Length: 597
Ligand code: GTP
Image 1 (cartoon, rainbow, N blue to C red):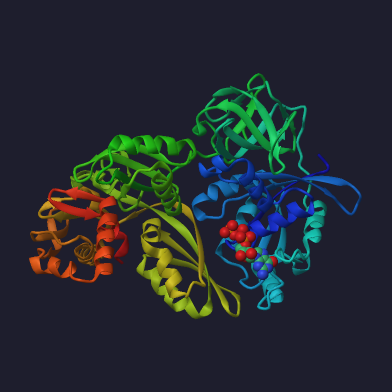
Image 2: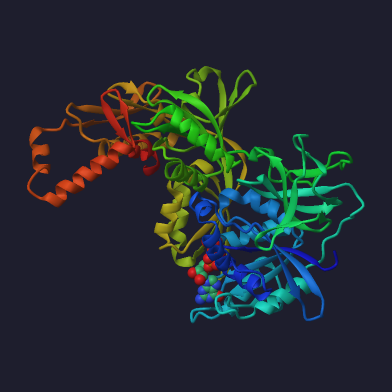
């Protein structure tokens, strides 16, 4: 155990995490990710085509240090997006140290700070490393000062590297060996292992990546999962070197994988503890919490696809993704479909894209909505995952609460004014305003999550020419004055278009929404009336005039390329639309609510 080091690399996106990981692999003689990809390409082309991703969750390396000893290093990967911040915290819980990587040309960004605090929470030793020092625009001294002033890490501890050019790699390895402590624990105690990652393997079934805190685990052993009490027999244990390599056992301090003929990935919950069924531990590794989707959307088959096709696709998809939750729902407007819960917007995009690309169904997605909590006068609390589930009868409602986040933004000071305006517009309440250095400002806000999923990303990037970065974490639910906006097409309510909004913004959003719908709903042979209202009281209305014969005639004029384009566009439109009565609603109509302010 004295010669084991368990660590992660944490960084803001694009600061060079993968490149540094590859260099560490190369330096220690393990196969790099690039080489591995090439090898996999040769041998497993079919599997690759089927969508097996080469993810190195926890790679084992051997490093012969300057002190003459050989150390076992486990590099544990962390996901790089705010949707997966719980997974990051569990991966860090499996480590004793973290390499905090900062781009020498960018300096500290929002994810740098967020990840730093997660590492501090786990009591990790943090090694600050500045990357990309080969670039002419690198400012290592400025970034060193930021690291000292903002994170409180002494600048003499900061290492300078270029992952791309291979500069300073050995120094990083030496620091890992010398500054990060070895794991503690007791091999004689009952097995206590933390699950920090998982995936579904065609041959092995659901595979758990674990860190062993006490005891050991071998094939043939009967294990128990703490959160559910379910038991399985271990078939194989091993480590990624980086190929999946079988081992005789995993022992205290080790990091590796366990396969136990587990068929359902949902049995392997990230953050859960694995113990010996015959001799279980009393208390689990702290910090477990079940996945809780914060964002829900309806997913329905497009015209030409059936509910059964969508159900089969979702079932197959869910084998590989334990984080999505889904249940059937019926929408008067869209028919049979599913209400699907996601960790966040990126997760939702991944699911949408993979359902269409890998599982061959074309889908209509309704606008994502956060989870609301309705407190009824009876004392009951209802969780609202679909705006149309909000009680019609306001008399029984005591209050509606919505999720709030702590939002951290880092931006060059020139854009601060713009960003403060944006945050105010989005009902943010400022908590902090701090200069990281004379040119960089950090802001903190409390803000409703619903405002972030609307269009915050595009707005903040637009207002800061792409320079501002942000990250957020869930704070809790807070009471707000919220109402549901209902949408009517030719006087019929379209439940799938309704959404929940702050009362003060209802008028503006209603107006913008009907205007947007007018733009995206294709003209029909008859007039279409689009209205939005609170309850049945209409507050905004637009009319989509009928198509006139000569408009179509014009389109089919002589220009052959134009005609082709038009036909192609129509074909594309066909794929993702839904017939509502006589009106065709394209996918854009369902997302129009995200495009209003
Ligand atoms: P994500 O996987 O998206 O989180 O990014 P990452 O942090 O893993 O960054 P990645 O290693 O993919 O590097 C991002 C970009 O920076 C790539 O184009 C790299 O080639 C480049 N890069 C990484 N390290 C260096 C470096 O030391 N110098 C220079 N000039 N470029 C680098």
